[in-house]
Length: 178
Image (cartoon, rainbow, N blue to C red; front, side, top):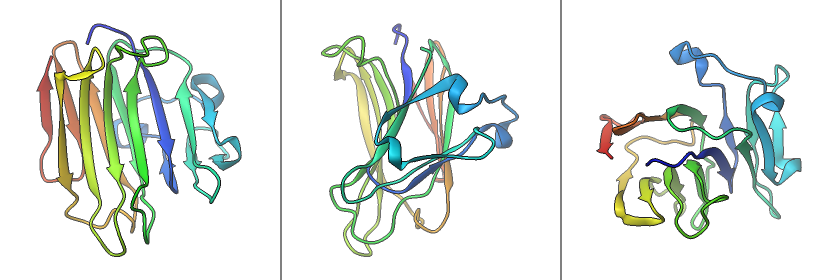
């Protein structure tokens, strides 16, 4: 992936995106310095210290935010707690994309959390798209072997010049070579 991308987080549910820095000793910036609301402003609740945000879902809208800057590579992480109950059709996403610049040929790296029926397991799908297509990337789906609605769990993407690594509370990490 040679194109720069922006970090985006979108929720169609109740999600907490907390500062990732504490677990990895990585510096953070205040929300105003690094991000802008993307949609559902009323459902974006920023922490008092302005270094974390909680994304909410109501009957009318979810919410999302976008980074102010573009990144060529980096480490991106979010602490996410998924909603309980019936969530079929709900997708929570934590992703990097340059789709706002290259609409039909965008690059994308993401975690997509695919909702469940009453009491069912959540699935997480990781995507790597190059030039707007999985023919230059791949999709992988996993059943989460734990209940992601009980507490927040950390999900991370390490995007290096030659490798993309996804890390989650699953028992393993997986890597894509570019």
